[in-house]
Image (cartoon, rainbow, N blue to C red):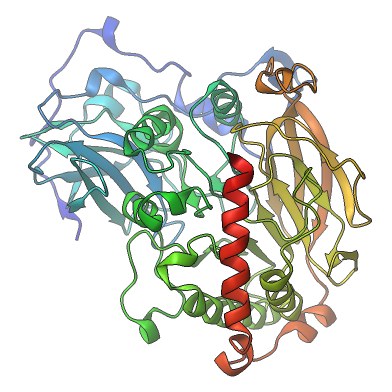
Length: 515
C-alpha cells in the first residue's frame, strides 16, 4: 500500500549547483521526441528532427548519480516492469548483497513536466512502499520488488529504492504511458559483450514506451555473477523503460529457470485462479498496453519445470478471451512473444520444430494472432502472413529478431523459404509504432565487419532502418471468425507425450548448437 510521506522526511540535502546534472537536457525536451514528432533516423543512425538536422540527445533523463546515498547494502540492478495496469502502476525490482537483507523501500512521486532538475533531485517523496524480499537464486544476494499503484497516468514518475540502513539508489524517472500513439522495441539473444553494448546504446537513443525482450538475456548459463554484470550494464535503460521478458533456452541452464523467475517481476498467469498463486516472475503471462494485448510464453524453453501442460491451457484460454475482446472492440491487436522461432532460415536450424509448432500454429490461427515476436536464431527475418510454413493472408506475421548481439549467424545455404519477406545478418532491434488500427514496424540494424567467422564478431555499429512494414488491424469479419471458445485438455494435451519428448530434444539440440 502506498503511504503518504512527511514532506520533510528523508529530504535530500542541498548540493552545489556544479554537481547537478541532467546529461540529456530538461524534461521539457522529452515531449518533443514523442512518436508523433518530426524526428527521424538518418542513414548514419543518428536521431534528428526534420526541422533541425542536428542530432538529438537521448530523449530520456539519465539517472542522477549525485542523489545516491551510500551504504553497506547499496541497491543495484534496478529494472522497471508492469504487474498491474500499464498507466497507473509501475513495479521496480532490484538486488542487494550480503548475508542479511535490509528492510527496503520504493519511494516515489509524480510530477509535472517542466519541473526543474533541482526539485526532481531533492524534493521529498510523497509515497513509500515496503518491498517484498527473497533470496536471489544461486548467489549471496537478495531480490527486492515493490509496486507503485494508483499513480497519476498523465505525469512522469520519479523514484528511488533502498533504505536508511543499506543505502539509497540514484533518482530515476519513468515516463507516463501514452494512450493514442506509442511504441515498443523488441529483440532477443543479448549478453554482455561488445555487440550487445552497441545494441543497448542504440536502443537508448531510440524513443519507446515499452521494451520486450525475447529470451536468452544474459547468457549466464549457470554463472550468477554474469547475471549481475548484465543487470549492471542494463540498469541505465531498464530502470527508466518498462521492460517485459520471456525466458529462453539459456535461462533453463540457470537452475531450470528459477533465476529468471526470481529476478524479474511479471503479471500473474492468465488462469491463476484455477492453478493457484503465480510466481512473481511468471514465465508465461499476459497484459494489455492500450489496445494491444500481449501474451508471453516459454514455448517449452523451461520444459524441465513441468509447467508446459498448464501453460498450453493458459495460452488457449488467454487467446480465446483476447479474440472475444477484440470482436467487442476492446483491443485491436493480439501479439505473442516467445523465445523460440516458429519457422526459421538460420543456417543449421531450418526448417522448424514441428510437434510443438503444429499445436502453437493451430492455436495462433484459431484465435487470429496478428504478430509472433521471437528471438533464438541470431538473424533478422520477417515473414509474410503465414501458416504451416506457407504464405497465408489469414495467418500471423513472425518477427524473428535474435539480433541482440550474442553472436551473428548466417542464413541457410539454400536461401530463404517462400514465407520469408526480409532477412538480414547483423545486430539490431525492431521498433513498433502503434496508432489507431495499425502498427508500423521498422527494423534498425547494423552489419558485421564482414561475413567471415572472425568478422561476424565485430560491428562498427552504424545503425540504420533496413526494413519496414505496416500491419493493419483485422476486419470485423475476420475478428468474428476468430472469436471461438477455448478448448480443454482433452484436445490440447492429447498428444502431449510426443510434444514433451520433442521439446526436450529440441532444447538439447539448441544448446549443442550454441556450443
